Length: 78
Image (tube, rainbow, N blue to C red):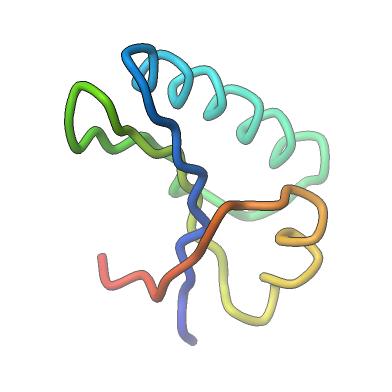
């Protein structure tokens, strides 16, 4: 089954802290809704750009996307 990475971009000098804080809320959402999602993390590309992301099965993506409104998504290759 194909997996998708739902991504939230954060830019600016506080991007890493903001992404880390967003991950807290993503984990809360997963727990509250009893979802089987274990890959939730932060990636930092520079001092001015970090992302928060979670990885979902493609078949589960639509309701999660609609509820959480990620900025973008891509196929997860990890």
